[in-house]
Length: 292
Image (cartoon, rainbow, N blue to C red; front, side, top):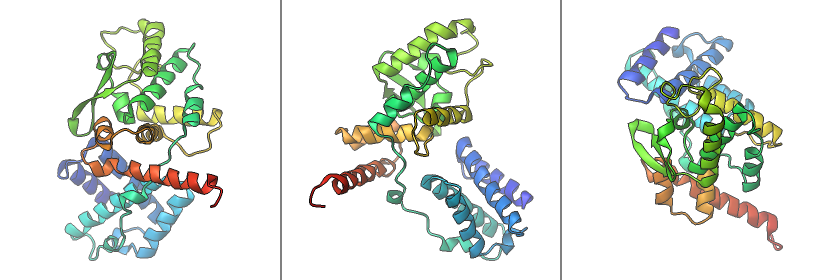
């Protein structure tokens, strides 16, 4: 199966025009699937049956995969099998019978205002790592940036009102940034970044080696702070992006404005947050209404 996977990854990178991050994510997904198949003693894609795919999705669910991650994995496998059928490497594409979850079903995890505050209180801003982490958390929540966008932010991408972001498809956008985030960034830069040669370190957030921080480091950092904050939800950097959008919508922001700030190409991607708000509304009603 390794040769087929290599050809598939080459195909989606060169012919499908997917972003490097998407190619990387799809690669992880299909390799995880292939590893699961070998554990089930299935050593060729032509031998994969419906029951193997169902067992794999059940396995992911037991591993506490987020719904959105499971959806992406399912899409990656569907694209893989389309490729295999196109190349005549399989006779039947069994994945055509698997329906991809609709966007409205993918309601992501969202933090409450109180949980956000607890999370933001965790870093020790008197240390270099704590000051950096506080600034990262603040800008993730204040501006709703993708974690990959935070990793590539340059020092001069942030001014007194906006952060200039290079998003998906190399599309640049300006996103408002809050005063708390600016204060945290200023504290980090003035207290701890002077030790680095700024001419050679134009990226805003650095690791202990003086290189740009990566997505995995931010993911681990958020997991650690969530644990110390007593937050039991399964959260990630994207949770702060979801919370940013949901809290804006809850406070009356226009959906088109949120779409612009998030950098969504389609309003349908942003529309999921209306379903989150409706779900929260129903939950509040069921919990609080005396006649329910």
